[in-house]
Every structure is written in C-alpha cells, then in structure tokens.
Length: 466
Image (cartoon, rainbow, N blue to C red; front, side):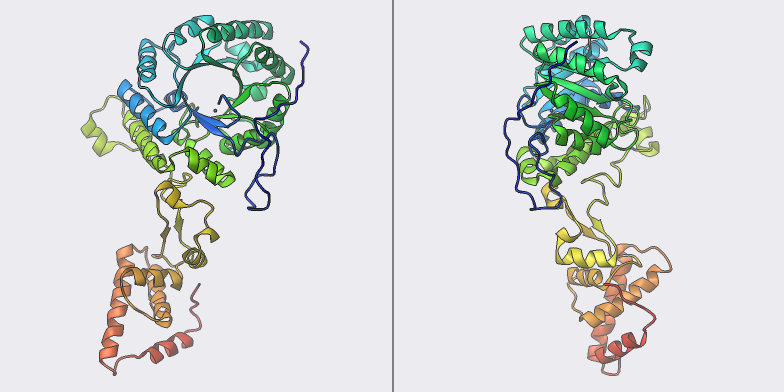
C-alpha cells in the first residue's frame, strides 16, 4: 500500500515565550503540551484530551468490581473534575455491561461517553445502540497477537477496520481506531493500517503500549512519524509495567499526540496505565494556567479517594461489610502518589524546611493550594532545623529568641536520637523549655539568656542545622 506523508498543521502555532521557566518544554509547532485534554481515557480539536478509562481499563484491575451505582458515582465524579471523555467497558462484554453503558449515557454529563469494542461488526452494532457519543475500536497488530489472539492477517485487519469505521460514522458517532501492542508491531504494518483508516475519515487513531515495553524516545519517534502520515487526531495508551507511563504520555504529547488514556490512580490490567493525577501533575508544570482553567483540580483528591475506597471494598469479594471493616487490607492512595500522596507536600530536612518557610517555590514545583491541599513542615525528627522549630513555636503562640529556639532544637534532636517522636512529644519539649524560660525571668537565680548563649557556644560538638 502506498503511503502519503503529509505535513500536519495544528490549529495554532502559538508557543509560549521560552526562558520563563526551565520546566517549560522547548517550543515545537507539533507539540500539544499546552493544548491537551484528558480522556478518562483525548479530542475533536487540537487540544490534548485525556480519555478517562477508569470505567473500562480500571474495571480490568484485579480487585475491581463496579456495580451500576458505583459506575454512576465514578462517572459523575470524573465529570465534576472536568474530563473530556469517559470510556466504558464494551457493551458486548456482558448484559450488565450493556445496561450500565445505557445508564451512564442517560446521565446528561458534560463529558462525552465512549465505549471500547473489538474490531468486529457484531460488537459495533451493539455499541451504537447504547447511546454513546463515540466508539473506540481496537485490534492487535503485533505478530504475537495476530498469531496467539485473533489469528487474522493485516489484509483482514484493514478491510474489517474500514467496514467498522464506516458503519459507526454512518450513525453520526465519533470513532477511534487503535492498534494493540503497537510497539511490538511492524512499522510498515502500522502505518499501512493507520493510513487506510485515516483516508475513510476516522476521528483519531490510537497507539497502545499494551505490555508497557516502550521508552520515551521510542514513543516520541513513533508518534512523530505517525503525525506525518495521518491528518486525524492521535490517541495514546501506555501501560505501567516498566514505570514509564507518565513520561511516555508526555513525550507523546510533545511529538504531536492529542489524546492520552488515563485512569484514576492508574488502575487497570496488571500494573495499570497512565494515572490521571500523575498526568495532571506533569501537565501543570508544563502549562499551569491552561490546566487550572480547564480542570477542577480541587476535586482530584475526592475522585481518587472514591476509587480507592471502592477498590478496597471490591477486593473483599462476597465477604460481609463487618468483616471488611475489621479485616480488610485496604488499597490506599500511595504515599508517593503525585499531588495527593500524604507526603507530596511534606518537608523534613532542616535545609529544606528553612527554604520552604522563606519561599515555598524553593522546594516545590506544584502548589498544594491549587488542589485544596496544604504543605507540612515535618519538625519531629533528628533532621529538623531550628527554623522549623521556630515556626512551631510561633504556631503554639509562644515567644523565644533565636538563641533560645536553637537550644530548644538541641533538646528535640537529643530525644529524636533515642526514639521516634510524635508531634505531641516535640510540643511537650517546646512547652517545657518555654516554661523554664518564663520561670528564669521570674527568678534571676535561674539561667539567663546569656547563660544559654554560653552553653550553646561551649557545646561545639553539637551542630545546629539550618
């Protein structure tokens, strides 16, 4: 098949002034890092759309079981967050899946509703009757899947893809065609099928790193090559097996992709896919104003907590609620989760704390207040510095000179060298120290501030960190 290589022209060649931040991507007329949209699992215009796939890919997570009520809750939460597309499990998967698809389509959400089906006319006929706004069609193109999954050759794949796409379009619906296992597929095969479906008017083509084997450079190269072959939008789907899902998604956008498939907390088959929150964190750094104007970031923690709680309960199978409450090992939001992990805005080391207290941007690239969250300066450890203790003294409404705070910090460190400290432990040390200072002021026979300074200067072995 002859391939026509075309020059893709985005809706706008506007680029942000370079040099305003070292975190800004290099200007590139094909890059969509400042025009992205999220498809929970991407768009009809030049913006990048995350396609949110918690209700499709996420349902393939080992512990997931979503009944109709649960699916409705998740769909509404994603819609409140502001995703552009919500992708649902194939209505051909089961009778209940079909009914659930119809139910969500009737909710009147702002997000467009998609469903994900095999490249087969039987699946397509069922999908177009559910009320969805679009149909995502997929078939394996690698030698692995052609031999061990569906057993079809490329001639059959192209012929069937065109048939299904034309049928879906005849119903007035959006349609995406995606290869499966794209990065282990022959490049000529891939470009042949993408070129063929582009010519019949597919809305977008999809690239899928189905086994999570791709590297960012491979992603950039393939997307940039494909961008020169098709005029339609490009959707991308990255699995997390080797830890590159977020980096791969960002590189795809830099290369000209328009859509990224995501799921809440990244749940999905095996290790899952690009997490919604992780992608948002990456994109905020690339273009904060755009992301803040498009998505309700204060809803992120709410939707992640909702899904985490649902998956925790699902993992218990048919066990009673009382058993679950007392015995279940819950699936929590990971401690290092971008944005919403409990440590995401926690600062512990003394030199970090000093800088953060002076200017938050010194050790933070994201602003917790954008997400309705707050930062925390950890002061209950041997690593604490006197600036962190001074901040806590002020929070407690007490008054000390810097010299006094430094001596108090020594006492906190001495205790922290013996055992882990809780906040109450440190507060007790601070209050007791302050009480001694007050008593000293009332009784001149007790140590004065000059004596404290002398004690500190004489204790050269103990260094006070910043």
